[in-house]
Image (tube, rainbow, N blue to C red; front, top):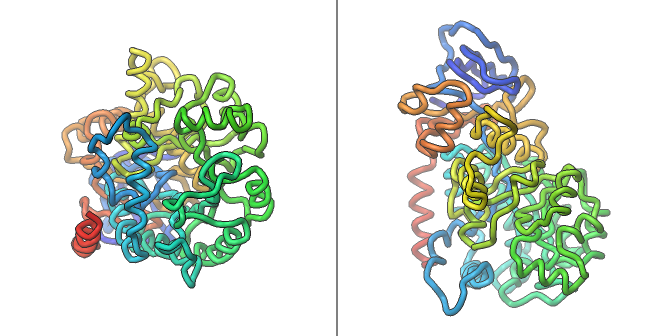
Length: 455
């Protein structure tokens, strides 16, 4: 399918905000917004015909784009027990070598891969701010500009989340040398936010902000930034990812990190709590009541040995992200989320909303709604007035061709995976057409050069 900004798309099946429908015409206006949806319609001459079922693409709510370059390079056993903390040392060594050009190339290649797997928007948890010596660039927003440029080149929707990162541990412990490229004072961070606000607007991106973690920001710093940061955009934070973090939080404050955050900060529907892996029963209850989204990254959490989030007990709002990008696949994230619960509980079909429900449909609906909320979007569904973001599954695949309704989602997420994704539209333009992106050849050559130098 060619790129268009104003067209009619005929789909034999489509998952609308109101549910599955047959013989659907989706009319896209020149502004890239869905102008009309007609179910039970007749295909007209000139209509673009979707090559399979049409769905809304999912949002990837947690990304560290530069870490894609080290995927597969932290799988050699070290001395003693390997953990998140030993992986982090490897990451610090790699990040010290990255230039702004490198970051733009890595992010562009990554974002194309995310599109090809069925994501339509990404939340970039952006904490690589400074040069190799830890000094701000002459344009303090240089690295943020590179992320915006990568999103524009790939065509993916972008929610940029500049990260405040000031300390190495609870209680305001000074940062380490490996963290020098991440570090801001409060005033410098607010200056960065001010510089990025008009640029994200001009790029059609959404601007939120993030605290790296309770280890990296003091309570007073968090309160000043919450009071001063512009707008009502999304607010993200890593929390309770590892047991060591829980132990350190108790030693610092007498409280677990999730309990401290819920006690001391105005956590509400604007917030996205990344990982929250080590949540006890009371924290799970309070998380669900807060209206916040929990950002789950099952492939990274498994890669780092973090643990398994108690999703069956939680039953609140959640979305998925690919974090360190050892995987770029939403189907893999959702499948592993479900399978982790099954392995722990020694039972099947855990994350459904009742007897007879489709596991794939309930996972998809939850991740769609949670991802949209976490990235500051009004909706993640196909409805009039929403952005024309569409995902077309491959109707020639036997598993997809012989499925209808929710079984399509069960087949995609639990049987077919990434190869089911054929076309992806973002904002009224086809960014992936028959599994290809217009930059595939040129970006692969640049990406290969970056990896060769880094490795």
